Length: 173
Image (cartoon, rainbow, N blue to C red; front, side, top):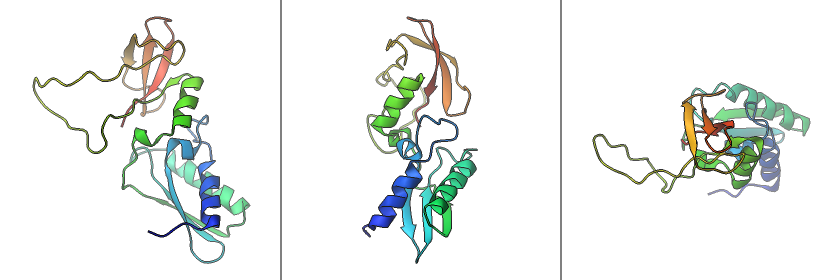
């Protein structure tokens, strides 16, 4: 494994500081989508970016914002490459990102108990109940699903039965 140079680390931090176009309360680093920056000669950088899902419409805006920022910081040539493996997971959202989502009024995704593929079973097999989705306003676990889709495909619309406030829930993936 090649150790990143100080400049690559600096450019990675800069690329990661770009706000997410759909959730501007989060940076791309907090969302966990900026994977790496590699230098190719003097003044040329390649950024690896993994979308939250394959058809994510925000990937073009993310790429353009990263390119613009790195150009402003002296990179003559910037290439943003979409990398699909390893696939992005909501587990890639940082603790700081989860805190910011909650403060913004969006229930963060629940953390998966195990890493790797999620087993899918058919039939009457019983599994442990998933952790409840907590209201980002009052913290109650007494919430209900109103719609599987909200303002973006990655969020669901829920309502708290305790404080009666509606809220988005960033779905687990």
